[in-house]
Length: 243
Image 1 (cartoon, helix red, strand yellow):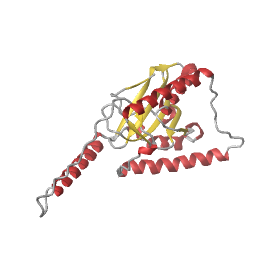
Image 2 (spheres, helix red, strand yellow):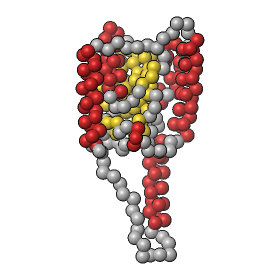
Image 3 (cartoon, helix red, strand yellow):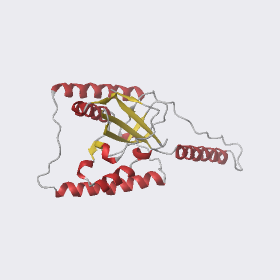
Image 4 (cartoon, one colour):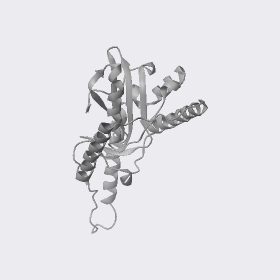
């Protein structure tokens, strides 16, 4: 199980501590408790600590400019149990509609690994000022539209007010790619995306040069298959309930 640790704002670890790091191949619309529906990028990171390995699923909520960290339960396990917890993290993130790709940090030289880690928002977190500025701009834009709708020479026309949709039920749920909304992102997010895409291209180049390299495939037993089916059914229920 993974639970939202709202006290976490970043992963204060070095690139050398990372055991595995996955990133979603595309953004998905997601709704979390207390946050509006919006585009999100998913990460799954497992890193080494003194007493074992920790696994964290993180969701970068673009509109709110916030990181939501979901920690495994228990938070620390021995290295012999790390693979099992990481598999549970994959099921948890993929059940919300994300398709994860291995960034293969273990293939990168130390310098490139550090550069990749520092380019992601997980390392230093997202400043709360960014979210406040974004919300302030949206509020100012709405006020400006309202003022423009109430002015003019024809005072007999009805005033058009923007209708706010009813909030969706609390809980993480994917709305699917058919409901994508083109929300503009700020320059900081675009810069992160461009830097990360360049580094991912470098990773692919390194992978193609390795002789005899094959994509890693995970064997799935019957119990894991049933668990995935159960998580998928629960997620579909949440999606249908939110419509």
